[in-house]
Length: 551
Image (cartoon, rainbow, N blue to C red; front, side, top):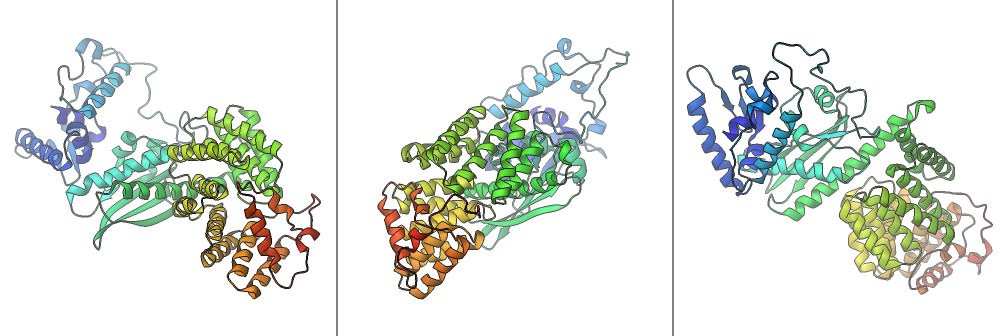
């Protein structure tokens, strides 16, 4: 009875095997649930399918009830559910919370639905389709939504259907932690599994972006392919292949999903920035102002930083309680503090704004990350560690939070502990505009551990991403001179001065190390470079007019 009811009340009368197993036999192991479903379907086919008529159609992945041949009284507008009795009254499956949740939701929906009196037309009846695809869904505040379609199992092994569907579900959960990105719920997106017309899927769901994928076998492992596209145009924005060594290792699956979420977030963020850049300035709303500001902020120049702060301030003026406007305004302030080595008063202001952002949306890890960064710069390392750990717990795919926690451990004198978090940051988002920071912090960790070759390598990689990042220059010079390569150290010092003509020892004073002797260590390394006159680090004390050049 439950199988028939679930099919009858579904879009087009269809459900996946995995969906039915999860709702009806979720308390059992996968193999047992699959066996129970096969047994019930076999019994139903014997009773429903006769002669040339098949009411129940099943294939490898999906089950369908022929609604064109069946009258579903629960969906008849002429029948009042209040007088007809409770939907599936008396039916229960002990111990199966999934079925009870579905039944409770379905009963509430039926009771809330408008009904027509028999034979009397409703002058204000709703049309069959009431969603306007030109407008953002309610509550999305102008952001474009994303829908994850169920990943398809093409391994040839039905027993792995649960893994393909599980990847999709974990991806929805992971993306929902990216608070600026609206994600369509699983029950809605999974009902379009077999729909070929992606434009129709986008219109019906209100999704601008679609994620699709496949699970397949590779040599002694599993492969997962994922792709991101625009629903309206079908334009492929991004695609990637991943490898899973095992279908049973939960930790590996979580790590894979976190990496996938981080990379999708980066790609969608870039696509949104480009899309908003094309809009007219006089038509920008709160969300548009924020996206345009994010584009400027990622360019990492003084002019763009000032423009980003202006746009974020305009967004905040339009909606003072917008969590996204608060977070981006705080991010812009954090960047200007770090790049300009601003005093403690500015850091305290940043901390207040980060706390306000965290209160506006306690589920957004970025607010806690920014508060943790402020505490780190104030040399409150225990508080910083707690806040950054909390940010990661809220959003495990937040690459910058991993990098900042690694930086916190470096400053606290624990470089060995920092390395794992910094490597996690690189693994999560290899295209993040802030990746130069994680690479530089890895160079610092290896410097503190005396691993000069590794320090040189990662400082060079950091400079490839941000040629004017003075900290990476300093770390590279230190590692080269202490590794016994004075000629290369001299060339690296020349590159530092070319990138930062006003460079002096005062740059180091802002660095919030617990053990301040590390600052002396870095300065000493620069003074050991041959070919530079004595006192060259004191000669170029900045006068406040130095250019704002990428770090």
